[in-house]
Length: 168
Image (tube, rainbow, N blue to C red; front, side, top):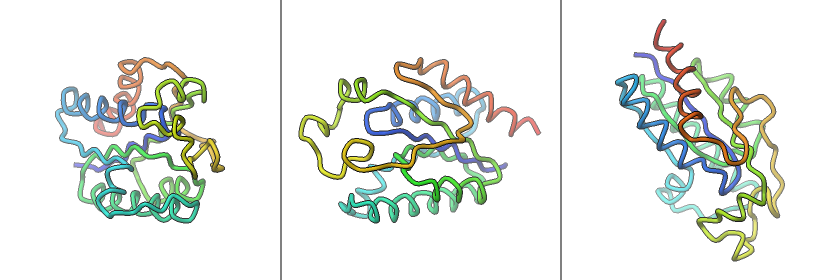
């Protein structure tokens, strides 16, 4: 079995976790493959890291992809949802994962503010990526979904890419 990384990225409130969970379910239901869901927020909690400075975020982003690499190299399909605000981390992914699918959720600030499930906007959170902290947005993602994208359609498109890997 070949491992693969599905890297779902976007700013807070873009729907990364929602899409990632749906993709994991569809991978299992459609391809019959057990996949692993990694969420940036949960991984951060596991290592008790509350450093949201630019350097702190870079360190965590690097950690996330190294954990994913460990699992992918063992043949797992990993679905990782993370803000991923660094070109350098995405470049690492392209270089180091044979089977890599980058999905960018390009959702307007207006929609993200409406969703605000973690009250980041409401609390005017300091060091919030893309709001009061600069980010390097993805420029070469395989798939881009905008604003109020349809989750089912997005899942189908992700599965289309994965089916190609596992058909070989």
